[in-house]
Length: 149
Image (cartoon, rainbow, N blue to C red):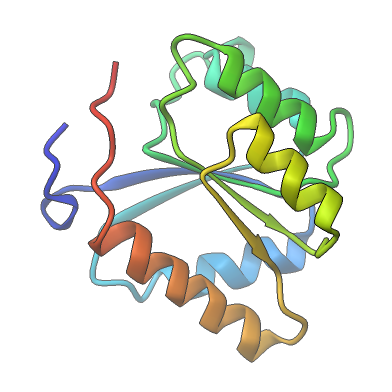
C-alpha cells in the first residue's frame, strides 16, 4: 500500500447500527477530496465475518481503517475490538471508536483493548457532520497507515 493516502482510495469498515448516523456519514464523506470506500455492517458478528471474509463477505477488501460503535446488536463493540486486536492478521488495522458513551470506563477499557482513537459522537446534525470532517482531516491527510498484510 502506498503510504501517500492522497493518491489512493481508502477502505473504511464502518460498524454502526444507527441508520441516521450511517446516512449522515455517507453524506459527509461523499464530498471529500479523497476517494473513500465506506463499507457498512450493522452488528458485531457481521463485522468479524467481513474482516475474516466469511459467507457473504468472501470478496471483501481488507479495510485501511475501522470505525466502530460500542453498542451493537449481536456482538458488543468491545468484544469486536478485542477480537480484532487479538487476531494476528487484523490487529494492525487502526480502529477508531465512534460512540455516544463518554464514560471513563469505556474510554479506559477500549484503549486497554487496543483502540487507536476514541471519539464521542456529538448530538445534532451539524456537530456530527463537523466531527466526521475532523476525523477525515486527521486520518486521511495526516496519518500513515500500516501496509496491508
